[in-house]
Image (spheres, rainbow, N blue to C red):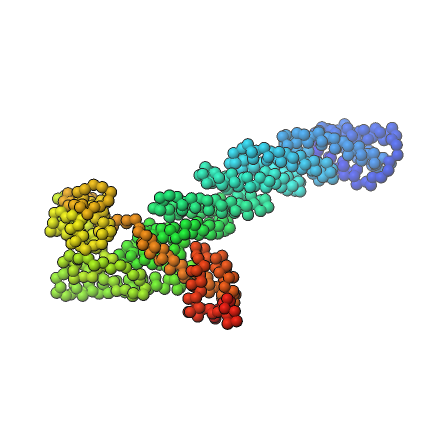
Amino acid sequence: MPNRGGDLALLCHAYFKQSLKGMPEYQTYAEMSVRSLEFSLIAILNYKQPEASLQELYQIIENLHNTHRNVLYQKLHDVLEQTLQQKLESLLNNPEDMSILAMLSELQIYDDIFQQEFLKVSHVFYIEEGNFLIMSMDIREYLKHTQIRIKEEQERSKNYLNKYTSTAVLETVYKNLIEHHLISILQKTFNLLFENKIIGDELGILYNLVKKVPLGVKHLSDSFIEYISKKGVLIVNKPDNEKNMIQDLMDFKDKLDYIVERHFRGNDIFNDIIRNSFVKVINNKQNKPAQLLAKFIDAKLRSKDISDEVKIFLLLFTKKDLAKRLLLGKSTSQDAEDSMIGKLKAECGGAFTSKIEGMFKDINISQSMNFAFKQHLNHSTSTTLTDLSINVLTSSFWPNYPTYDVNLPSELVNYQPNLGHCIVKALFEKGNKELQVSLFQTIVLLLFNNANQLSFNEIQELTNLECEELKRTLISLACGKSKVLIRQLKGKDLENEDIFYFNSKFSDKLFRVKINQIQLKETIEEEQATEKSVLADRQFQIDAAIVRILKNRKKISHNELISKLFNALNIPVKPYDLKKRIELLIEREYLERDKDDPSNYTYIA
């Protein structure tokens, strides 16, 4: 069996190197010679041994090239074209036939006959397949099918096609299976993702496919933004979901981070999309998510689960929650608090965190003072049994708290507690316990040292606690998990006639039992106070943005400044709020009005 690729190449080379011009009519020798060459070429193309030897064939070509070159060329051209056209019909479905392409890929006839027809057939095939499958096949299977088609074409190209044909046929696949149906592919894929009906592998396939087509990543980015917004707004606006809203958003962000890292190859474009989209989602419902987020971060820092405490939107953090945490000793990690301050400072600047840093400084100084005080007591003749800790605070650093005109028991009357907590020793039939309770819980419990039962009205009269605060306290003691008191009447709301008893049969597996204070639904006034606190913290953002814009522009009109602020700030603001901050910055001499045109502002270096 001859080497078909080499034989054919040598045969054609020996002929085509001659210049082919006019040729007279056939003579008998010429006709026989051309026919012999025709049969030999057909035999080689069909993997058979030609009857004439290669040397004889070469000699025939040499003898004919001067007088019969045009006829000879046309005959060879016709034979090759006819043979290849016969094979094209089974070319795609029968890879074995494609070995002939390896023999012809370096010849001119490969370009003239095969390549053009092959690309045309491939183009028509993939147009029809794409149009049919995108309508009839599940999008997950469609993505996998497209991936398989690409691998098939790559393998086929590697074995049989030249570089240009390989590139062109792959472009045909991407164009007709992906680019022409890109919008439909993305819509169907993200609809399944929204319904949690798609696994990550399909997203990885999707990313690898769309990045190969023009504007593929751009369209994928747009669909990703739309998906985050749609899913995020659903979480934020879900009825009666305030308790779980922030955790649901955190879980959603974790999912998005995994998709980008695992399936979108950590592309920073999509990381930026997550960050910017979440700011818009959080602000979709004005300030309510900001309030809940502030409380969520505070709860994280109170617990030992602090790995996620600063994952989203640190700018919404409130000093009031931090103050409570510090004064009540609820923070479990100084490193976590320092990390929080560092990130806040990086985002908002030193002006935003100066008071927070002052709060930490006060606590550290107070701790040193308390340690020195205890050392003093150890060397004194005092017989006090009360373990007292005091914080000395700088008023300008700390938020204000309401004062209560309550009747303190004799055990506490010599001290000045506020935001305090106590350890109360209690005697029960099943064993003694230590109850870790708040100041108000302590006041109520100590009343039962001298009484077996007390009504709501009697407790309020003895303690002078405000009605709602007393209800909150009694619910925590009589209706929570640890029922130290027994409520006589059953019902949803406390009544003035309710009677409370000391629960002598109380038991718990722990010796020291912490009784949490019940968080009642916030009143309108409390919500407004929290919102005001959030807005106050955001003022630093607004001020920083104003100064930054003026510093870059040096001079700017009022309307243009307001427009740029709306674009720069990722928080909901009103024109009145911006105007107010501008006026305050003018008073503080960060900027000034233009003397010739008061509607323009000038930066003061």
